[in-house]
Length: 507
Ligand SMILES: C[S@@+](CC[C@H](N)C(=O)[O-])C[C@H]1O[C@@H](n2cnc3c(N)ncnc32)[C@H](O)[C@@H]1O
Image 1 (cartoon, protein in one colour):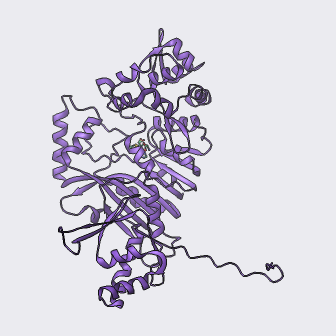
Image 2 (tube, protein in one colour):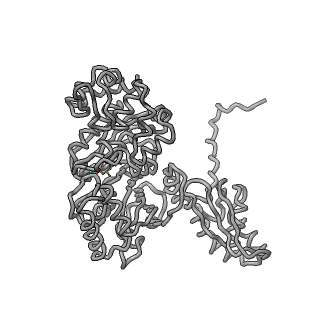
Image 3 (spheres, helix red, strand yellow):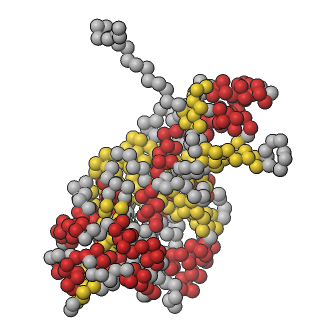
C-alpha cells in the first residue's frame, strides 16, 4: 500500500532538497556527531526555521513531532495517506514519524532509505521489536564498501532488510533479487526500490537464505546476514539472530553459495565467526571452503566474549533492565561451555574459478588484518582475484606498485638493517617483511627487465647461486603479485597481420 505513494514522496523529497549533503550541511559537524551518539538536541537547535528541509530533518532524522501545517508544506498531499500506511502519525495539530526516511549517497546517486526508527534517541527506553527493520548501519556501510562494483548481469542480496544493498546493486546489475524472511523488511525493500526508481530492476522474494533462488546462479551475491552468535535464549531479533547454533548461519552460506555462482561470480559475506579454544580460526574456516572457489577471508577484528555480550545486549536495549545480569551470565557461560575463546568479525570473499586459466587447486587466503584499510576496499579484493591468474616466470616483466614504500629497521649505525618491510599506502595497506634479495628485486622492477635477469643480477651482486636464487625467489615474487606489491606488465598486443591490398604505406 505504501508503494503507491513512492512517486509523490520522491517528488517531495527532491523539492525539499532532502539530500545527504544538504542535511549534513544543515546539521553541521557537531549536531551530526551528537546524532551518532543518539542525541538530537543540537540538531533541533539548528532546524527551527520551518523550511521544508528542516521539517523533514526534524520529522525523520531527529524523530521530533512537527506542526501539521509545516508537515503539509514539506509533504504536500501526503500527510494523510502516509498516516494511513503507518509511516506517519497525525494527531491534533501535530505529525510524528513512525518510520525513518533518510537521505543516503552513493558515489553516483542520491538515494533515500525508509526503515524502522532508530531506537533509544535522547535516552528514551530502547525498544526493538522482533521484526525490527534496520536502517543503514555501520555493518551495511562495511558491506557496501566491500562489494565489487563491476557491471554484472544478475545479483543477489541475501537478507535484504530495508534493501540498502539491493539499491547499490541496482546501479551496476541488470537484475537484482533481494530475499528476506521478515515480511516488514520485504515491504520496505520493495518500497525503497520504488522510491528510488529501481523497482523494475529489483525483485524482492520471501524465503529463507538461498531457498527462494533454488537452482539459480548469480554473478554477484552479497550478504550481511543475521550473524550474532548467541545461546538463543532471549527473544529472537530477526535482523541479527539467525536461530541457528553458533556461527552455523555463516558456515551454511559459505558452503552453499558456490552452487549459486555463475562462472567467475563472486560471493561477499560480512560475518562473525567463533574462535574456539581448540583450533586456530583460519584452520576452522578453511574447512568451510569449497574447491570450486578461490577464497579471500579477512579477519578484521576479534572481540573477547564479555565485550561481545555487552555489545549485543546494549543493541537489544537490555542494559539497565532487570534481565541484564542474568542474560549476560547465561550468554557468557554458554560461550564457556561451547569453548568460545573470542569472536572474529570480517569479510569472506568467494570467487568461482571455473573461468580461470590457472592450473592446480584453488587459492584460499585467510588473513588476519586488523589495521586500517583504504575505503572502499572493494578494488583491492577484485585485484586479488585478478592477480591469482598471473604467471610469474623468468621472462615476466613486473612493475612495483607506485604506492609501495620500503621501511628498514635496525640498530643505530649498523651497516645492514635487521628487518626490511614493504608497505602499501593504498588498498588493503598490506605490509610484509622481505629478505635482501626480494627487496632488491622489488626495487628494480620497473617493467623493463624480465624478473629472471633481475634475479641473476642481484644474485651476482650478493655472491649467491643464480639458479638457486631463481628457484627460491620466483614463488615469493608470485606471492607479491597476488598481494598487490607487484603487477605484471601487460604484454603488448601483436598487431593483426595486414591484409594485402589494404595496407597504406606512407610516402
Ligand atoms: C543484519 S540485517 C542486514 C540488512 C541489510 N542487508 C543491510 O546490509 O543492512 C540481516 C537481514 O537478514 C534477514 N534474515 C534473517 N533471517 C533470515 C533468513 N533465514 N533468510 C533470509 N534473511 C534472513 C533479516 O530479516 C535482516 O533483514
